[in-house]
Amino acid sequence: MIFVVDVRTPGITLTRLENLQNDRQFEAVFDLICVSPENIVGGLDKGGPIVIDVLAKAAVARGAEMLGGAQAAMDMAMKFAGERVQYKC
Image 1: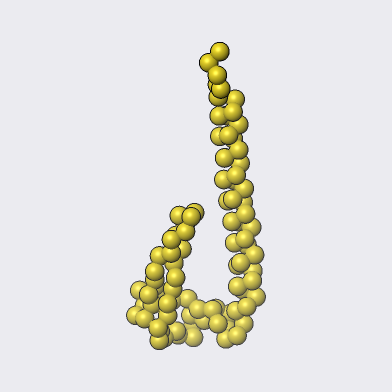
Image 2 (image 1 turned 180 degrees about the vertical axis):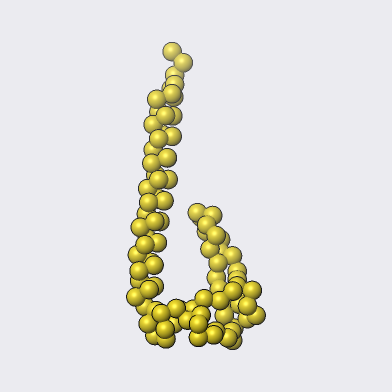
């Protein structure tokens, strides 16, 4: 089941996760929260296709982000290699 609730709902605890990319990732713990029927996405037991679609799009976006970072690193390395002087002769 997929649902939408306000993070300030009683019973929800968020803990920030440490990672190498310095992304804003959190662990969410749900402890006996109440979810109204209008906050259930796609209906009961019908959220799977929605999750798969969202994850597929997120994977493409993340891949583009990583490719952009790799391109920036390559550009900096090429600039450094062109300017570097190994020996002062």
